[in-house]
Length: 511
Figure 1: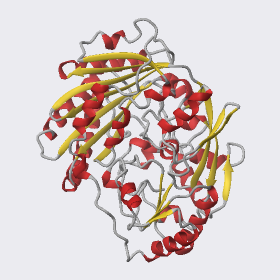
Figure 2: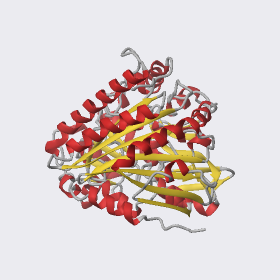
Figure 3: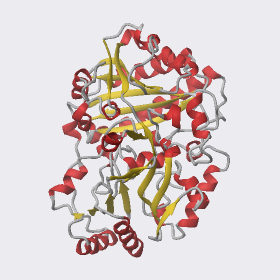
Figure 4: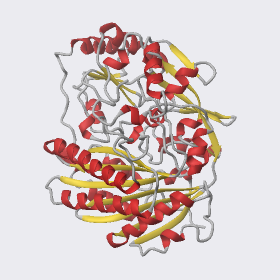
């Protein structure tokens, strides 16, 4: 048995190539927005009440925070940054924001690529100091919304347990859990939201409450994938699961093998019967090199013999499988994973059912053609497409946990497709935001033609979109695709936010 190190050098080298131009894309220093009088008033009061918890544009910590967004296009310069350490602190801030009708945003990890989702020119409430993991007992743990998943797993590891959460260490707890949360454990336990026991929530009227399925069934439904317009979560009580060492593989494929590799993903999506197995299949182009990159996870110290043969039989540039702690799986790039933060990038998503090799071949050809074109543009850094299996066991696990805002209407195997474009300079923002929309329109239209779907059906190829990958212009009725779901979410939001504070004064997806 080999206990692997948390860093895989070849992937780290690839990442360094990708981030060669990132320094050019980091945000400039912010300046106090003197015209934002409501926010300035709130910031002044907060600074007097909580002098050690407020950063303004004159301090270094303010600029460090701006440079730590996953995508620099989201790094709006706030009037101030407030770092609460308790639900009472958050409540005090919400009271002031409501009183002065100030614009605001809440940030957990800052991993969204949507402008306004976790950034503002008003009051930024950064949850980074509410990052503790406590009360790990009786199959539960209290997790702060400002934690990062890598930190959470490391804190839980000495107890022999883990939580169902994000697959990459730097991703924030709060945003992932409010949007759904795909995990390496999802085929066993569903989305991350399916493993929440309760939420400590500061409502839009600043009241602090605990939300459970029994105490607040409508709010419970809304918080299960419905986003951040219902208040500010200050603590998640999560169910924990026993966790052994795991087996993790990393395979690099050259361009000539990617179509075969994608076909193997289609086969896995349709036919895998072992819920302990999970994949993140990617194709990436960086500095003109197109390659496949597969993360293969098995929830046990050893993978059954020949389990991954459909992938290992394809000629690869490099293939490694090692036994390691679960916390290491979330950090395969080591500390270099943080180097991606501060780049300029955007996500977009679609979901496809009727998963066949013809579909994965189509996805490969359309994206490869686009990626090669962009590689010729000065300032382009990289592009990635991930085709993520959603197996029957995953969907069944989610459905078994009861109603949720995140609804997956189909029960058959599906692929969630996520595309990510990265570039270096602000001058290219509009170009690549338009480009990713155009490429997805072509991909979905071709997918419809292949599967026989009609244009009147869901634009994503399957009747739901995963909100944590969705771009801001993608339709809400496809993100919240269950019958009556969007209407119910709007009703719940208005019942807890009668003044419309969280609708009108924040960015991101509206309701």
